[in-house]
Image (cartoon, rainbow, N blue to C red; front, side):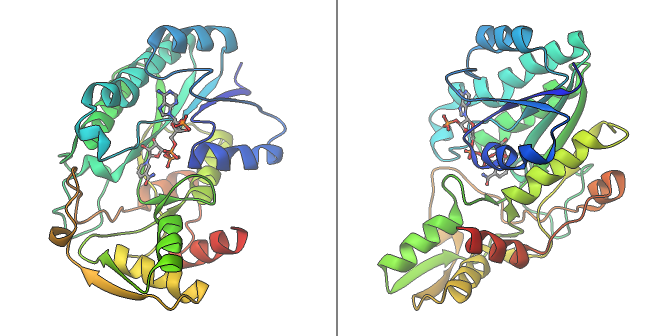
Length: 284
Ligand SMILES: NC(=O)c1ccc[n+]([C@@H]2O[C@H](COP(=O)([O-])OP(=O)(O)OC[C@H]3O[C@@H](n4cnc5c(N)ncnc54)[C@H](OP(=O)(O)O)[C@@H]3O)[C@@H](O)[C@H]2O)c1
């Protein structure tokens, strides 16, 4: 049934934002599933749920997103970000269903100096990025009609994210250090959820990979400084380099996504990052 949507990652940032938009789309039956209802590391359970629900469109927001932990949990991360996508893609191909899948800027190595296009060469530098890339690849060869949206730096009023971490630290400390040599653009999950629904309702399901984040170009330091300014914190923020903040997983230094393709294909509007941040902080 084309009007039945099955959404994974029910309680994640993006899944929660999609739940909030649900009331605007009464023409669709939106079925949200969490880890209990459909464990993405269990292909039999995935197939059982899909065969029971028979969605016309699968929206896969569920993922293994613990980027640092992934370095030591490679197998589980691969099951969720890669194998599960293969299972869903193959089911969709057989069942004439569509799939909207979310991927990441971490499929790139971060050495570019100009906004990344969908056609640019991928070269993940951590386990999470590699499993997400494999997920894209198996979906593209599955035979299913697919839209893959690569996004970056996702935050929301729901779940755990950089904005909430910064607020906690700025409440607790007089001084913090934030990485200033990684640049990109944040993505308010609410805006991305809206774009996903724009794709769902579009006249044509134009298959392909698309890039989406908010508009603008900043570093994590700039992002923290904006949170401080909007919330009126007094904490001193020191700009530090990635070298001074070692993490188990490498992170790309450059994550800026070129959004031209999604804007022209689906006619979506892309809010400026600071406007969306203000909106989120007001809602929080
Ligand atoms: N967050 C970012 O900065 C970022 C950046 C680029 C791309 N992305 C991509 O954007 C998408 C949405 O991310 P998000 O920020 O909404 O992630 P999130 O808040 O971490 O949510 C991920 C969801 O996946 C679920 N999940 C994890 N393992 C599962 C399993 N074995 N079976 C079923 N569900 C499972 C989680 O369930 P539980 O609630 O039970 O843990 C959670 O609901 C993902 O594809 C992610 O890779 C995210």
